[in-house]
Image (cartoon, rainbow over all chains, first blue to last red; front, top):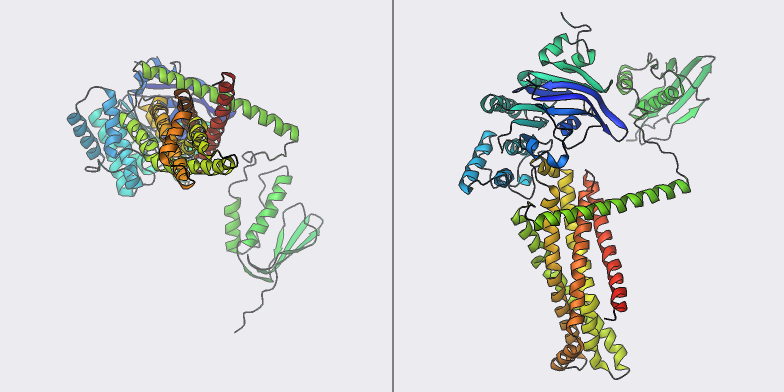
Amino acid sequence: MAAKITVRELTMAYGDLVVMHDLNFEIEDKDIFVIMGGSGCGKSTLLRHLIGLQEPAKGSILYGDEDFTATDPDERGAFMRRFGVMYQSGALWSSLTLGENISMPLEESGNISASTVRDLVAYKLSLVGLSGFEDFYPAQISGGMKKRAGIARAMALDPDILFLDEPSSGLDPLSSRRLDDLILGLRDSQGSTIIIVTHELASIFSIANKAIFLDTATKTQGAIGKPCDLRDHSDNPAVRLFLNRGDTPESPTP
Amino acid sequence: MTTPPHPPPIAVWHQDGDDVTLEVSGDWRRDGSAVKITGKTPDRFPAHYHLDALGAYDSTLPAFLLAHFRTVTTAAKDKKELPPLEGLPDNLRGLLELALAVPEESETKLPTAAASAIDKLGSLTLKLSISIQALLEFAGLTVLSLARFCTGRARFRSPDFWMTLQQCGVEALPIVALISFLIGLILAFVGNVQLTHFGANLFVADLVGIAMVREMGVVMTAIIMSGRTGAAFAAHIGSMKANEEIDALRTFGFNPFDFLVLPRLLALVMMMPLLTVYSNIIGIFGGMVVGSFVGIPPELYWNETLTSLDLTNSSLGVIKSVFFGVAIAVSGCMMGMQAGKSSAAVGEATTRAVVASITAVVVLDSAFAAIFTLLEI
């Protein structure tokens, strides 16, 4: 059976400026897959390619057996309905309350009764620890709360694949830990596949079962695998350096 | 108590064959006197440092050294070679090692080559054609979106529409009233001064009435709405773009065009004719106030206004207002959608939206003037 997401020969570019070239990887069902790399290496750009906000310069992205890249952007609705996306800044719609931010996709997704919507909104907010904040506007809550509300909104339609762009950056260690638990919980209880862009080492080691390292120097994937294995055994020194916060043994431990 | 005088900072280069020595003395302080450099600045790294006479120093000394190292590295073929730092005090050495740890990225610096006049003209022309293309594309998307609306397939939040309707309708009434009243007043004053010479000051009513309903009412309303609503559209959509909110709409399967542009366009196109009629009435009332001061009784003024206006005249402004509404909404939304992803870009988009919509209004009005003249209306 084909992997949940397959990326083949993907080259990402802004005009003539190539960000990353020849990325090849697969994401299996129920993976917690981390995209990591130094700042500015194209982590968020890769995420934007995966959700179709940017078109690849070359290569293709497949969901199951279906080619996402070859589908006309106007006809990607069936793919998009399986996605939930949390953006780096939260990207909550600022003219709507938190409750409305979550209820809008629900209301538009089909004929759901108002009371069901209300209950769903309350449930999603309570999952991220924001019970009772339905009537707050995004401007009235803190940065960390915005991120969590962004995750609640991303989960609104019970997505099959959840994309999180730097969910724990800017959070205090405890909130960040709770977020990790939430992500694990979501995978285990809802069976979602989760793709996370992050460079928080603690989160990477505790939740990810597969990670890709984007290497700025070579502009392609440095390594792919389980984070602990990469840290100790990767034959790419840049990966070991990154996963060990700079102090790495010169050669991989056997 | 007197502060001890600061000896001025001095750098002396000694070059003996390939051996370069840098002698540094004095107090190196940001607010001190300028550095005095003696000796020819060499094109290689100093091998030794003489720092016996060096006093206090802040960042100016490491900055001076780093600047020299950078010029040497840029000129040299081997960019990786690091300057010898032996002989420098530990803290200075540590700072320089930190600064030199990552080599200067020469590729990321944008080219700053001075463009010739022809280059500039060329890039201006290209930019113009790109912006015309963008305008046409946006107009096309607007038409498609309207088509989806007419067939009932466009999705947007109805509260958004009603909110915009309120913002560009009811909430604009006070400012439209004030400006229209004053315009009516001004027209009547100017007209009265001139017409009194001919003993025809009753015709002030005709002048104010026709000027308001044909031109001034609709043009002033359009200009107010450009500054008020067009700018608000651009700023709102622009900051939504900067904050990835538009991407978020897209990933939930909402068409950002239907969602953001359509309700704004519809609301403004619905409100512009109403505001224009309102502006016309207030303007005529302004003229009437002046009239009563210069000896035209209101009843007489009103009758004279009624005889001068017919349905054709009065409808011209209202018809134009629909087109102006489209122009303002399209410029505002287009500049917002095209805005870059920073707060400065949002400000720029707002400015461009106001300039574009006022220009569009005036150009359209001139075109209408020509058409109406040809049609002898």
